[in-house]
Length: 284
Ligand code: SAM
Image (cartoon, rainbow, N blue to C red; front, side, top):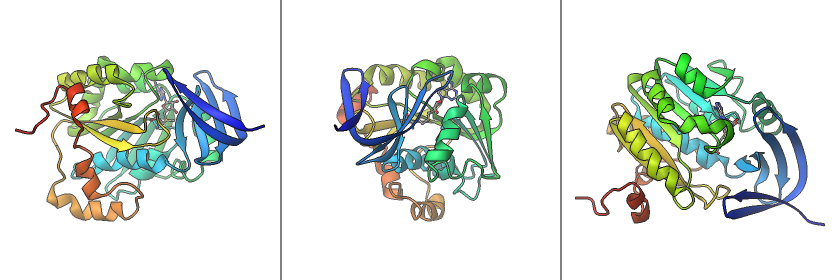
């Protein structure tokens, strides 16, 4: 009998032929499952939603990290909310300018299970520059976070524990936790599947940050395969300044998806996405 793992997302489903179940646990926040699939290797699901896989994790983790890190002239302190699989942290510590990465992940089971079953993704969670806090990112942002150059919201979908990471109060706290030239990046789901979220959250970002842009990437194991991130900045914008290109060339050599040309191209949006953001189709 063939075994399949299927993610049901709203009125869609995505299936993965599965050879075995490696891990299952119920934390106070969510079900944590890790399975072995024939096409994407090991796959992490939280409450049945695909979070990351061996074979395509590099797209998401490179794009959520290097686009803002290389847009900033000298990022030293970075905060990651969520990100318990460690992939974003692994990419961040590649940058020589980094002095400290704080990871605030609500579920310790995610960290522990990813260290065990995704050693190449969780590789740098024990890095000397990395501080892992097991706690709610909403509370951390409200009470403790300050003096960051970059804040990355590497969260689950806006349901369950992730819901509080999509509110205006949370993002106003995020703005205040940034240095005056800081920036925030958040994963903002798919423009094919989550139009309502995109229609509401980008105007909210624009009420808080002076510079708000969307960039995109292709992640085959996420609903629709077309993903977005919000680039919200207190000072620096895109495209990449010439002065940063040496750093970019060093980082892109270590990447399987990110490069300088793709950095710029990822901010170019299809018409239907411009419509969602109420942007003019043609650039005046
Ligand atoms: N790359 C994935 C994606 O785009 O769906 C997300 C990666 S990571 C696994 C998402 C993490 O956010 C989960 O480990 C989850 O436990 C964590 N999380 C959800 N709500 C949180 C909260 N309020 N504070 C901190 N971490 C939270």
